[in-house]
Image (cartoon, rainbow, N blue to C red; front, side):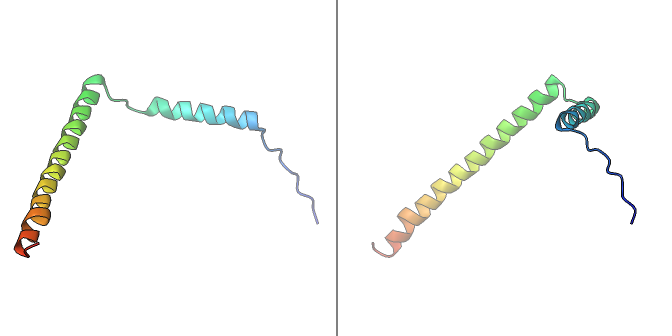
Length: 77
């Protein structure tokens, strides 16, 4: 039975350095948005959140009127 030569595994420090270098290489490939794009998307998110909040608020008022006021009055409670 032939003995296999064990290849030495790199240490923690060298693996961390390699990982950092790989991360930096990938980040250089990223196309980052410019300021007008960030502003436009942020405004879009805020408007969408306000619209959804308004819809939920309107549904709350409608359902409150229906379930708390209207239905109990039908059954004489």
